[in-house]
Amino acid sequence: MKQQGLFEQSTVDGESLPLPDADVTYYANWLSQEMADELMQKLKGGINWQQESITLYGKRHRVPRLQAWHGDSECLYQYSGLTLEPKPWDTPLTFLKNRCESLIGSRFNSVLLNWYRNGQDSMGLHADDEPELGRQPVIASVTLGAERAFIFKHRTLSQRHTITLHHGSLLIMAGSTQQHYLHGINKTVKPVGDRINLTFRYIHPQD
Ligand SMILES: O=C(O)CCC(=O)C(=O)O
Ligand SMILES: [Fe+2]
Image (cartoon, rainbow, N blue to C red; front, side, top):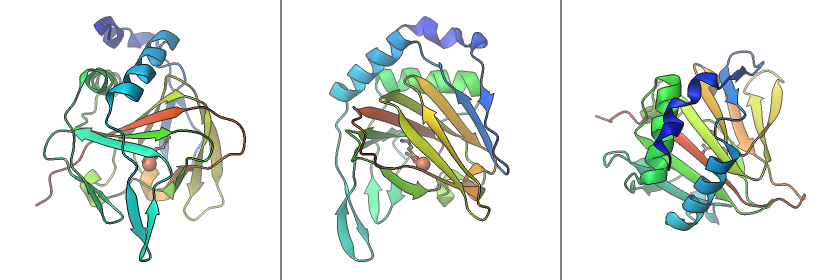
């Protein structure tokens, strides 16, 4: 991956989303088309993708997408009765982590990867509000591949906002976003291709 990419970011403009009680910034063209295409190919072939099963109300379900968890060795990821051990950082992931860190000045020590293979793959509404993420987590979400609608739903107001995340885009969720909003990706009957999303996170060590 071309390292010069790290230092080209002064020209990248972010757009603040009009969401009350949230702090969300969208960089539509964060990566060049060429970089985004190359990363998509590398991640499809170079990551050990898994389809996990979770237990919900006593029933086993296969998660409707492929996933992987990478990060510093102490960063365990736990949700719905599942514990994922981190795989180490590799070149494309380190490249993206450094690029996120240099743009927004926050540190990340882990990344969750999700591969939505078609319109039937999805992610239910949720907040990234696990205690180990801290009170006001900064989450950097990189999208590659097909465009899907990303939904924000306020927890108590009727506020709903949908944004189509572009190939090579970056979405930063910060401040009280997780406290006030759920987010997710619905299934769609439209014919859509592969989409890979990476959410960079900072996991605080647990006592
Ligand atoms: O695929 C996306 O854009 C959302 C991913 C997400 O919300 C998550 O990994 O927590
Ligand atoms: Fe999320």
